[in-house]
Image (tube, rainbow over all chains, first blue to last red):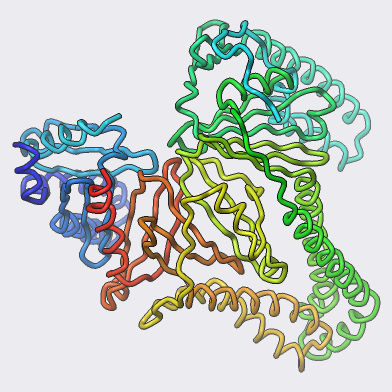
Length: 143
Length: 473
């Protein structure tokens, strides 16, 4: 995928990527659940319901995620109820890290961590081809 | 004024830090000595006290030994390329290098104690790094001067000696002195006269808890307030001492200032690394018509202004920061603007005002004391009104300018650094009325937030970053 192709489209999290994120969000709850159920069925059910809502919210947020590469900036949109927009000038990018776990590899996705002097941006579970192209495009700007 | 090192490309020999460098380590161990001493002192167990003293002496000797090891096996050196090497050679070798091109700013501090010991604290601020990556060294005076001149040399400087800051500090100091005296008088009056009457009244009406409050709170609060004002006065006196002999200079590549009477301070900032300049408008500045200008480079945010200029005397300002643009002097659009501006001061003001009103009938002794925080929060509320009507972000002459309120201060800021990241956050209510909070993130993890601005204004800034910068290239 070339930079020009990347700039014509927004990078979103595909359904498989969203599933991976949901699994990640569910894991701490699954680990904690036996201890809560040990206290009683009712607290366990309440905990499971709350954690389920949390995972659902994480999935909703993943649905609203979009990263747009411009000529001079990278803009990331996320959230519907609490919309957040992050704008990074491409020239400010000081490092790009690409993370792939076995689960992400199965889903054909990657996590991109983009660093700038002042802050850091996470692009979770975006398609691997687009992540690679994005990392390549941003790496060209590295000092 | 210092001159550049006569041997700019000459490497220095490997040198050790000043013995005062160990003070930072020893200071952190103070609690280890003091806690056992305090315990036995309160118990008045004198044999145990002497034992604790002996233990402390042994511990102190041990820590002095550790300090000696730290001083002996750590060193610094400048090579011929002007790269600073910081070395540790015991058990393992650690060599930290700092390139002079990677420095955004440096400061030289000489507090009174350091001046007596011939030491200087030099702080190096690497470009784009957060405050935790700042490098602080304690060197001999001449070494520190040499290091500063090699890392950020001052070449053909143009000197200025602005006098506005001294007068501003003096006036503030005078005002603080008068207010402290007034509060002392109030506290003495509360202590001498009021508690007994208030106690009787409270016993009659409210019971033991209110009696306790009536007995101690008015006098206690008044003395606490006096103490706070006195401490504020001490800080103002320190500021005044720092503004004596103040001078500011600029060269082709950097801008700096130095001054101080008892504690000497010097700051050198690389002009290309200045994130933003901030004209801080305070009530005192309005009265005196003298405007302090603060400069931030990376995570270097000196507590002293770089310079102070007065209305009509903007020549100095134009010379030092020619690209600075003031935010336009307009009122912000307040249609459906968030009332969050009023929350931090409004809630305590309402509570204090309510308590004052209640105290008029229930505990008249407390009314005067309660009026003090009420007035304080009222002033803060006035500041909030100022923020509500003035805070915003604008583009002027190709520069991002913003105005933001903090307490009673109004910050007029012009952004210089091109590597500006933005983050817009909306609440559901803000999204409904098409407004957003916009955070500007600068190198060094310095953040500035502008609250509840119209979405269109935020879009303008983002559009500017995307397209105008491209046009400049």
